Length: 201
Image (cartoon, rainbow, N blue to C red; front, side, top):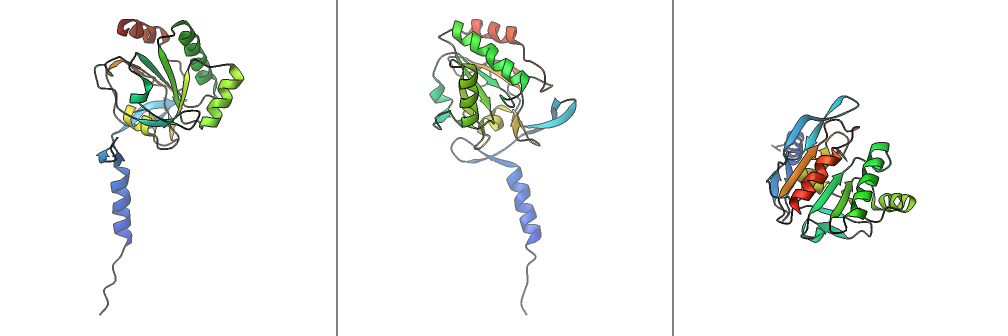
């Protein structure tokens, strides 16, 4: 008698396991945290994937690409004070304004490195920078793997875009300031960000 196995429950189980696991910086499998209702868009709640980082935490590693399609990790962003300005998309009004605001800051503080992180393709980021003359803020695209979003807790699960957030990372690669903007359509606290930068320099 031939034994026929029902493969569908096995496939279902495998999918469940995969959805609950993520890839660490060395390729090892690790549990991914989900935070239901951690952010809203036009008042509608969405789930954020990844941990809620706090001041004093080690800044997690990540792997994104720049406008030249070169891989960028935490280590390659330097050893100085850095701002990671996380936005859903540069082609939206608040993200546009946020990035231009930090461009002004970067022009005044040449020793400060500011990075804009989004799911926008590198080509779209480069086009946006060329259009608006932005050349101080460095663009990072998380579109390939969502690594930054998963490690920093900014990946919106249902939409696969970044939520709005700010991270100030110190010379010791510790988180000096963090803001997860609850409503995606609102601005972050620019003054608090700059105060954290001044304290970290």
